[in-house]
Image 1 (cartoon, one colour):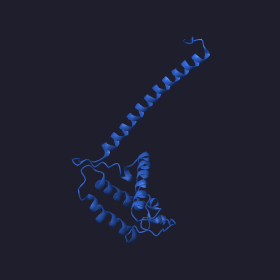
Image 2 (tube, rainbow, N blue to C red):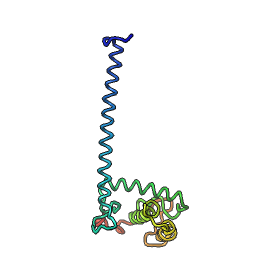
Image 3 (cartoon, one colour):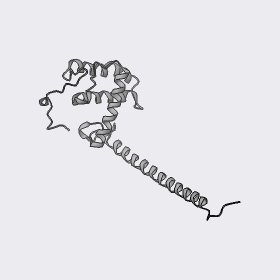
Image 4 (tube, rainbow, N blue to C red):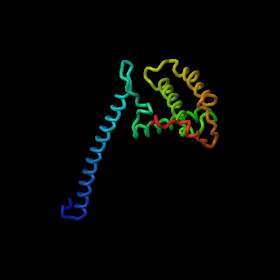
Length: 173
């Protein structure tokens, strides 16, 4: 036997079912909005990537100087994750200082190394020898510059900032 709609428990259950239905509808709508927003952001990023047949001089999405604040934050997080992985994957802790992200020239060097790594490991059309080139040329080149080159830093376990005069803040972002 069914309970009449005047029963308080039945009214409460019907009310909860209606609320769940509204919440489900709202969640579906939010999911669609997020998907659309993500697709828009992805399309904007892809439109700034130079293609092989592109004559455009527009900067690529990874160029620090051309990035907006949100893209800079995202790229910083991705680079930090990759460098953390790199430092744990290879015994580089002595050569890539823990404070690498406080040295703009080291950030640029590691960004270039990361891009070379992506080209060797993640691109669909990567060269069959790309990974070997990365290990033979790009990684050792960076390590040499970090230890002996113009970007050598001597921070050890404690960050030692370079004198402010070393950086010309007037022209860079």
